[in-house]
Length: 599
Image (spheres, rainbow, N blue to C red):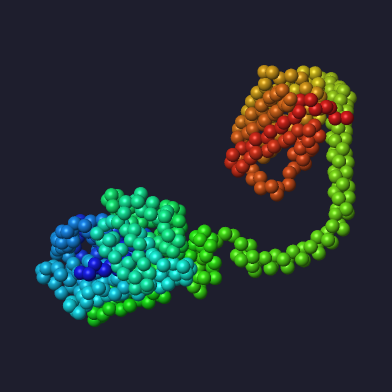
């Protein structure tokens, strides 16, 4: 605000928070220009922060942005001390003595008066600029021609007219403000403008917090409140204006308006909301022009340029105020959701799409029976396929058993007899050449006999029938290690019990295929096989430290894995493979321990 000898006050326009220069910073070079920006308010006020952002943006537009120092008089909290302003001015001069200052920019009339009346040795011939809401109460530019300023057109009279339009029966305005000396001066200035419009004033400034809340709950029906902020109450308790605003709006029995609008004072009715960032940019432009040598002048920023009407729909509903009374172009925030109002075009488009969809749905309904029949047929086909697969696997296992028996009992014995005959012929051969050829044939026959025995064992290991799964797996692991050089570790649950033949065959075939893949593809050094017997299921896990492989869901599984998967599913179990490149592979099988043998 701006203040004169008469005690009238104007709300200050806060400007620019550019980075504060530290006291320890070295003085600027002689060619660097500098601005000393002096605030009357403290930096924590929201509108101060917003205008600071705008000022910073405006200063940055200069071809060579000047250095900006920023200081705060904080007159609201310390202005009751009679010597505060002079002490501040003396301290300020000592702080910046020896530093180049090209323009002093202030944001209130009290600070402006302090600077223009400064002693002659303080910044002689340095031009001064000011920013203010409403005209100055004294003719400082006439007395001090080097003073230049930006005046924001006062929007409070229009605010009063809007409030009376919303509440036509209003006869009295309650002024709500704090108790400090500066706040009391401001309350007097607001009161004078209320009386100019023919309204009575109810002065609620300077009260204790409890008394203020009590008064606001008992306002007459022809009274509305205007809240201008409370920094200190009558008990000298400090406040931030926005902290108490919502509580006031909730407690009052009559509508309450706030000068800062929805952002700062949540729950107020609303009204003209200032774009403080725009005012900051405008003041930065004015200061830069003065810095570049523009002659002193006082220019005015129209209220229509930096304000817009914004109202709170919740408060309009609370006080039964129709939106038709709002000024044209007003924005209404916090409306309750309305499908037709908020999404009219979407609703119309949805209705059109709905009509099209309805016609499509009608057509689709005629196809539902056919699709249901198709699903039933597909399910039956899938069941038949599963049954066929089960029979094929069962038949395959039976055929393997038969072939293994034939290889062992018939062909194996015949090859063994052939080997014995060759041995007898070798001993009866007349010369060494014939004996050498017969020895070679005997060796090949022995190798063939070994291969037949391994093949028979792979087709159907007899040890599985006679000694059970753990012994059969241990024998296979030993054979695999001897053949490949890859170490295989077998861990069997101490509580392991005999299983049905189908389950043991399935687990054995899984192990066979897994070891075959490790040998051919994994490049592993170690394999671990674990068998666990739970209460209602058995689990087997085979892990290796090989190279692993990428599983992206699109690869085609080999015939061996497909066959294993079908074996496991046939018995009601699950088969899972976890792997990644360079991370090995883990194959897990879980089967119900009560699964019956395949027929």
